Length: 264
Image 1 (cartoon, rainbow, N blue to C red):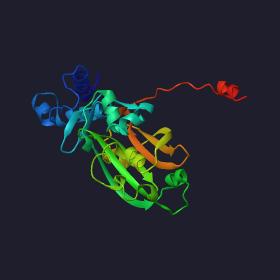
Image 2 (cartoon, rainbow, N blue to C red):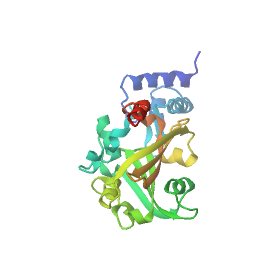
Image 3 (tube, one colour):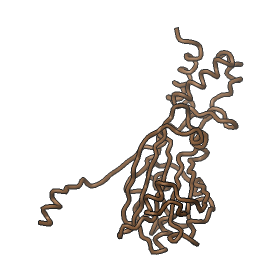
Image 4 (cartoon, helix red, strand yellow):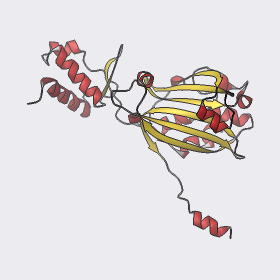
């Protein structure tokens, strides 16, 4: 026979799955369920911890226990960087993901700090800089409502961005079109990128910052952005809550043999 906390957790889980408790909705306070005869304080607490471990809810001081958004955001691949979005419009990458997912957004859901720092090893290697060289680090936290979805820190050579909006820490993208538009206006039009992805266990600080449930991994992104002549104008590291994104890539399948025949 299942323990009482497990029975309660299963009943609550079913109510979440049927939509009785909707994403973003706060579950009843523990004392309210105790008073309703659902069990002791320790029983209800154990049930809530089980739901959190199963990824159905999040718990935080001041917000209580809240049903998680179960439909992940579409994290677009090539399409999120379409020049027409940021060069000709104002749809920066994180907004492109929200639009594709049919989700609301506010520009100030991206916050940032900007500092001039000694380049971390990965950033120095990407930019071809010597040990001890300085770069600008633009560190962003992106949220959906009150829930953080990911962090993204971009590293730039000072000579590329000094005096531009990229080094302005005002919340939101770096003006109309964001950072890529700033680089474009400065004469550094982006041409191609390389993205590397891997999953790992989050650090203690990342668990707190991203409000991760117990046991949730993160997906780390390394993005290197080049101009047409091969100049690296941005190296970025993103840390994404794994369950909050569905990664989508749509691309033409290459045929290198055909290309080789064409040059003979």
